[in-house]
Amino acid sequence: MGSFKTGFGRQLGRLGANAVGNRIAESLGLDQSEHRTYHRGKEKAEEHKQDLEDAAMLNSIDAAVINNIDEIRDIVFADDKKTLLNQLESLEVQLTSESWKHIFDAENRVRNKYTDALFSKFCKGISRLDRIDPLAEGIVHLKWKRYTSRWRKIIGKSGLFIILYAIVFGGLAFCAIYEWYRKLSTTYIVLFWIGVIVYILLRIYITYFRQINRLIKAKRKKQKKLDYKRN
Image 1: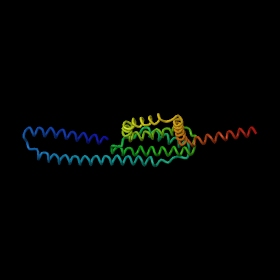
Image 2: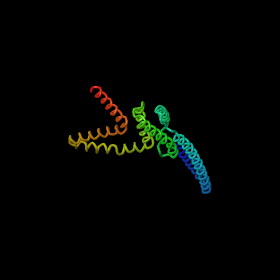
Image 3: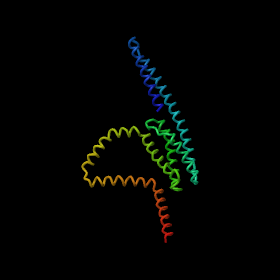
Image 4: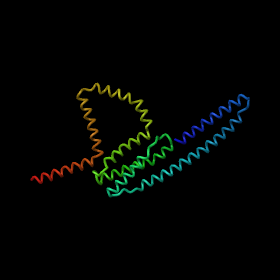
């Protein structure tokens, strides 16, 4: 975004200077044809030079980002639960300090590669911990962090699109849903809310199914022990 703002500012400055110069020359009755041709060629050369400099800067940023991505990729998650938790906490700190930026600028798209790689590695680590010990201390917090980071990614990259979509279509969608909802009978309204609740519960189960299954199995084992002692 910085390169876009800088280039745009330079272009405005050139246009303003040319307009003032042309107005002065016209008032003095001077021929501006050769002057304009010369300055057009000079401006194109300067623009070409600046484009090359911007491309070189973008390539250097891309090389640095790729180097950082390689470091993230080379992280080998431990089999030991405690060590793995420490690794995930370190990745969480890095992920919190990073951010996703809108994708309308080339430099932002390059920098987003690192945050994407960091988030992907963080998710893989959580999945590994989930398989090792679904009831590990802090795993619920880590899964919540994964969920919020996923929304940070969507909003950070496409926040403007989301806002425009909400403004343009949000009101229309709300009116349409309200009108449809108002015409439903009581039975269909109840079924509608049952469907919403089932969907929410299903999403919770998909996210925490290992934890839920482990707790159910632990409860069954405990109940079997109690029944065995009674008998």
